[in-house]
Image (cartoon, rainbow, N blue to C red):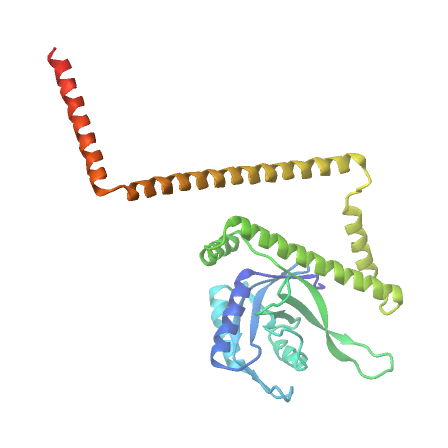
Length: 317
């Protein structure tokens, strides 16, 4: 069965990031390596768990590297006791790009999984988008008759989670949420990030179509079909009813914003007037002589005494 898609669960991402941060504190190693556990069903590879594997390599010589097989086998045996359905489906490293010795490491992992999948997980992503890239090893046939070589072919990947994992991720995000920022600013930041990601994707599509038009890249019909489906989903903005609906919606939103701005200005003026009144009264009280203040207090006490006596007279009558 051919592999169509790789689904990476949040638990795998958390484990890889934790592995990378732990190694980064004690070593100058640029990437970390580990095994992926999961299952295959109907062309979809479900990567549900992972574990780290001791790894080291020489930055200058790609042929010099170390992968602890004994540790890998002992960890896999322990994971099988916990969940026998999870099998080794491939391996990961934190890249962020392919390395020259990845093919050799993949051949070692094939001893435990014949159809090994490599997932590159960027622990410190700089660009907006998914931090995962999936690859499978394929035989590359050369036109000049030279022997075939193994290379990596890209596979579609996505982030997926079950209901229990979604609840756990929500609780985790709730704990690490920045309390200094409000909900409105968070929503705006999320929308801005989504629009930036969409703009990057559109630029990639534009560059690809430009290179196809110039003859630099061959025509890939599945990609063209998908782009046509995207264009078919776009609304026809030349319909008068749709233009009117957009205009009415925009005007309603602008009216709400305008009304909110007016209310905010009125409340600010009201607070300013109250502040001025309070300050003026405080200045008058502080400017009176001490004798005048005592006289006012004495007059108030005499006034209260007279009112009490009048009430007693009324009761007695």
